[in-house]
Amino acid sequence: ALGKDHPDTLSTVNNMASVYGSQGDYGKALEYLGRALKGYESALGKDHPDTLSTVNNMASVYGSQGDYGKALEYLGRALKGYESALGKDHP
Image 1 (spheres, rainbow, N blue to C red):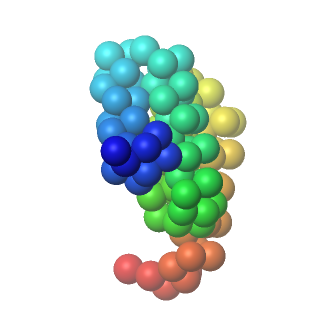
Image 2: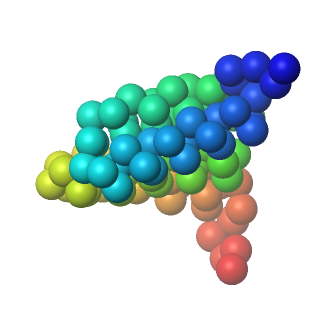
């Protein structure tokens, strides 16, 4: 068994959040994204690309809800993390 915080498990949790978001169930999407984010941070660290992808996904859900301030907060976090992990000039 891979366990609840294994990256493959968390990828599925992230994908489930995407389906909930596509259905307009933003609360459920954020619940699953929060679970994935917590697991990725624990397993891979805050600046790992998989973690940052989840942060980006959370921003997308907040944007879809019209919570643009929260969306920009999460996008800023993702940008800062990507620049830190990959460098500002990464393609």
